[in-house]
Image (cartoon, rainbow, N blue to C red; front, side, top):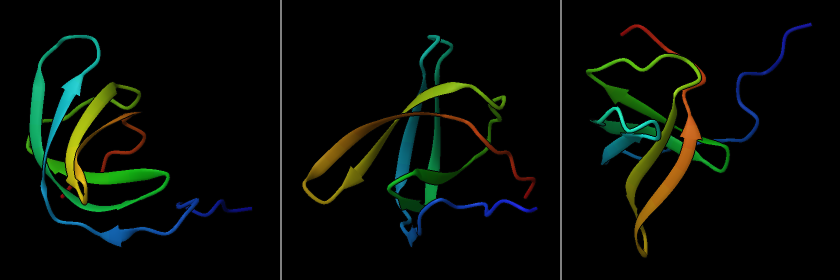
Length: 77
């Protein structure tokens, strides 16, 4: 039985984002593609391994927000 890829719907959201590695190994910069209550899809020129813990700073209505999470999927572009 196939599992659906998304747990909740996403909306397009094209903004610059900063990704900080929780382990202190530096920052990455990219762009969001879409976001929803359960995640954000970000394109970035540098790769992170699946499972890497990150804090993503993104500009949302009402001001910038820091969103904690981890890499769950890699997609070759």
